Amino acid sequence: MWADDASKIDMLAYRPYADLITEIAVSERMNPLTIGLFGNWGSGKSTLLNLIEEQTTSHSDKKIAVIKVNAWMFEGYEDAKTALMEAILQGMKENQSFLETSKEKIMSLRDRVNWMAVGKTILKHGIPLAMAGFTGFPPIMLSNSSNLDSPEDVQKQIDQATKLKDEYMKAQPDGNVIENIRGFRNDFSSLIEESSVDNLIVLIDDLDRCNPDRIMDTLEAIKLFLSVPRTTFIIAMDENIISYSIKRKYPQLSDEGINVSSDYIEKIVQLPIKIAELAESDVKNYMLLLIAEIYLSEDILNQLLEKLKDKGFFIKGEIISGAEILEIVQREIEGNGPKYKSGMTEGDFEQQIHIFNGIGSIVASSLKGNPRQTKRFLNTFYIRKRLAEIQGIELNLAILAKLMVLEYFDSELFKELFQWQFEHDGKPTQLKLLEESVLGELEEGEELNIEKFSKNTNWLGEKMKRWLGTQPRLTDVDLSPYFYLAKDSVSDRRLFSVNLNQAERKYINQICDIEVNVAIRRKRIEQMLEMDEVTRNEIFKGILERYHQDKKQLETLIECYRLLPQYKSKIFDELKKLDGERIGFDEILLFQQLDDGSFLELKQYYIKQKKSKREIWDLGEM
Image (cartoon, rainbow, N blue to C red; front, side, top):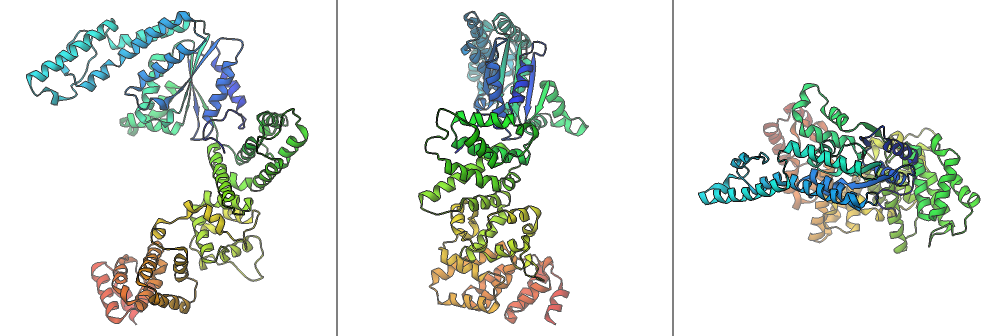
């Protein structure tokens, strides 16, 4: 299994980016500098930050102090600006790069930061507007007039404000807010200049996980307080989320033809670096390397990556074959220690590499160039594999992987396939026809008519043809154990909320099979009269649920009306819920199977109440 966090091993070939960014970050000529690492969720921004941290801390030419901050940790703080400054100062205090002589100045700056938050504390406690008149005190607004209902309340507020004001003036002799910002910047700059540090590099991760206000506060803190000589800020963020936060704060500019978000980001970020989505070939390579990571010892994995790098796979953007990986691991790498992690075997490693080498391309096409999605796909695969092992279920792992691909890129088709296999004891005949069509195995003159068994035309899309043509074939394979392992994905709350066992659900599917002979359907409905009342009621609820999902079941519902008299009232109520303007000739012909009185009542209801066209109803009676 793989942790859903940043990797410390460079399987995405990000090392050149890390080298370049480090080179820029430590350059005297470039600072103060803010670098933005822009990439979508799960694109590997945190992994790149880890590589940059590793590179900068091992930089030999200069004395570099590196502090890593997770912006999401500030989410619970009242003031994100002061929380960020406090976190950076604390990091500086703990960093061995700063001399002991710097500790006192760091503590002094931390005191200044604490008092910068006094204004917000005052607002929180509801101190009146009148307090703004105190000399040197930050202007504040009346926040809670309900605390001023009596002279005693007013005096209490004044006493509280006076106390805060005295404490504030002792700690902040400059008094003025602007002067305090300038004072902090000067002191912060002096602290770094007088220390032995050549450059302070601050890595900020997970900013795009914060709420919009926190995002803006953090960016403003960097610009206003912290961007001073010998500092470099490297911020990992999703540009779409940041843009949304900016537009949310400055909506009044949106209608004036000004791209406020781009302008704002340009003012904060001097050097934007965009992490592109991985190509399909990159995702397939990454997937095979993740499998290698879980089986191989760290030393062997690192040697494998170096060998692949030397062969130019990453630079050329070539697909790494499973055979290439096995050749390098088994023939080209020699090591004193074990090649495989404890509990892992060479045979299992070969099997997994072969499976995902064969199906890797179609998997990669479904994962949208996202490393995190790749990890999640593989984690789900191994969870299901292990669940099967625990329960003694024998699986073809290649079939498990292939079905998971369909589940991942089209959940509706996956659910429909589940329905088909459920109706055909695990071996859906519909899938057999689709595979034969794609592979050119239909008999001469025979054509596939998808409308006979599905209303979803996606079965005929190029992606599905590619999936159907990928080995292994699923024709005549019992798919039920695979869908059992995926039951969280196929459960339909509307149908499975009904209290039915598997045999009863299968019975409902047989009744609602639109391809079944009418006489057979009629016989199955009639058999419901022989059931006990509780079972019959639950099955009828299931039939109603299927009708709600697919209005093609109108014919089934009318058969139930004719054959199950105890449900006539409920069914008639359902028949009155259709869109009157969309009722056509086909629906009216089905309604004619009702008794004369019910048909007439339904006709009058739709014409008078739901604006259905009389001409169509009259035509249906001819």
